[in-house]
Length: 205
Image (tube, rainbow, N blue to C red; front, side, top):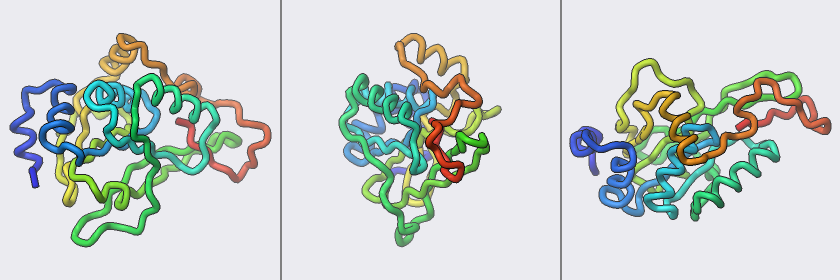
């Protein structure tokens, strides 16, 4: 198995697009998977992936309930980018033998009382057939100090392709490529659907 240090040394001078192309087509062909949400940084990664190999498996991570506009936005992205292998997280049974736990974290919001809660999406079964995991959910803030774009997590190489990207870079990329933001991206307190019960938490985007 390729280790993080080896990959970092090989790709040190590559820009993000070349780095992803190396992983998907050379180092881990047919063994690379992408996890993402509907945030701006995720959309940047999806655009780059679509230009390299649109058949790369894409796993959209979300909590059970989605706003209709989230479904519409996701369908629009998939169609416009020509992505051909869209998946949902598989039912999870915990870490595989000899491996550690793999997960993504999401912020889920209740549209009635506007509270938010952190949700963990376990991905052990989802990632079972892959060696390279491009982790692009991006539900946290932009880091003050960029981390490495490759790190070892159990048996997997976990990739953060935008580890060094700033908010300005993401916004510029979105604008230059005409990529739309999720409708909720500029709203802090969206109006809830009237039929939504108070007990239901929904994933904003």
